Image (cartoon, rainbow, N blue to C red; front, side, top):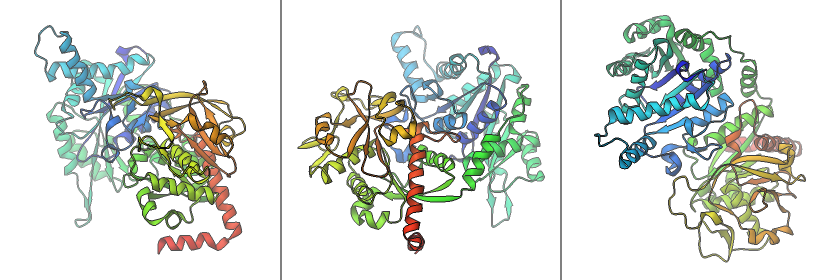
Length: 557
C-alpha cells in the first residue's frame, strides 16, 4: 500500500505514567495483524537523550537492543514479542534525535538563515520520522505511534502538536486517536471516579486532539452507567470506552481487547475491511501460562533487582520458556551485594536454577561470582548472560584453574590474570553512547555441546551489547579443563559461548538471547535451561520429597 494510503493510530496517555501504553499499543497491533493487515509501530520518547544507551537502568529500565544495533526503549521489546516482527532504528524516535538532526541542518545552513523554531522545524522533523515508518515497509497498511509520557508534560508537547497536524493533513478516516487513561476505584467512597479521565481528555482537546477510543485502566469492569458518563463528558461513543482491567499475564491483554471490540472499532473508524482475527494459538499460549502442571524456582542474581523493568526481556523469556515446558517459573530476586554479605548458600538454598544477567560496573560482581561457584559445585542448572558469562569464566579461573587473582580488566586495569579483557576495537573509545559491540552477529556452535542441542543448528545469530570479552591469551589454559569454548565468531577470534561439560547444564553466553524470545516461540537456550531446571526439581523431590516443602516453609517463615 502506498504511503498516501497508510493509516495512523496515535496512542497517548494521561493522568499517570506506567499505565501500559506499550502493552496497549502492542496489543492493538497484534489484533490488526491477525486480521490480515500489515502493521508497523513506533515509540516516540520525549527525553532529550539521543537513545537510552547511557541511561541508568534505575531511571529508565532495560535497554532493548535491535538487530541493527540500535539501543531503544523497552517498549520495542513488547512490540517485537507481540508482533513476532523485528524492529529497526526507524521504530524509535526521541527528542534528542529530532533536535540533533534539526540543529545539524541549521549549522550546515540548510534553513537559509531562517529562525529555527519548534513549529514548524521540530514538528516537521517529527512528522517526517513518523512517515518514514510507512516508507521503510512499502506494504504497510497501518502505522501505530505511541507517544511517551503523559498529556500535559512539557517534553511531550512537540510530539502532540506534530500528530495533531498529521490528523489535519490526512483524510478523516486515515487517523484515529486512542487515549489510555485511569479510572481509579476509591475504596472509602465505594465507587469509581471518572474525573481524572475527564480532565485528561480535556487537556487533549485543548490542544486540538479528540480521542476516538478511550482505553481505561481500572480494577473493575466499567458498567454501562460509567461508560455512558465517560463518553458523554469526553465526547466519545460509549461503545468506544474500553475497560482495561488488571490481568494475570500481559499476554491476556490482546484477548481482553478483542472481547471489548477494540480491533473492530479501530477498523470501523479507519474504514478498513478486514477478517476476524485468528487468536487460537495465542489463547492456547495464555492458557498454558496460567495453568502449568509443574513449577520451578529460578534465582536472578543482579544489582538492579529492586527495579524489575531493568530485566524486562529476561522476565518475559522465562514466561515463554515456562509455557514451552508446561511449568510456572517462580523468579527469586537476589541482590548480588547481599550474596557477598550473607553467602550464597543462605540465599540460594532450594532453587532449581540460577541466571546471572548482563550489567556494567564492579558493584556486586563478587556476589555474582560466589553464586556461580555455589551452583557449579552443587550441579544446579546455570545460565549466564553477557557479564554473567564473564563472571562464570572468572569463577572457574579462580576456583578450578587456581588463578586466585583472576578478574576482569573492566574493573581493575592492573591485573596479573585479566581473563576478561577489553575488545581490541574498543581501545581508545571515549564516547559512551552507541559505541559498544551492538546488534546481531553470527556465531558457530560446537556440535558436541548443550547449546547446539538447544538450537539444533550450527550457525546462529544473536544480539550483543558489550565492550569486554574472553581474553584469548587464556584459551590454552582452559583447553585442558571442562570449561569448553562452545561457540565462536565465524573467524574464530571471539568466544561467544562457554559450557562446563562436566555439569548437567551450565552455559554462559556473551550475547543476549532474551531479546529474541517470543511468547509462542521460546528462545532455545531459555527453553532448555528451564527444561534442565524442571529435571533438577524432579530429581530433588525423588531423592528427598520433604526437602522442597521444608524450603518453602522456611521462605514463608
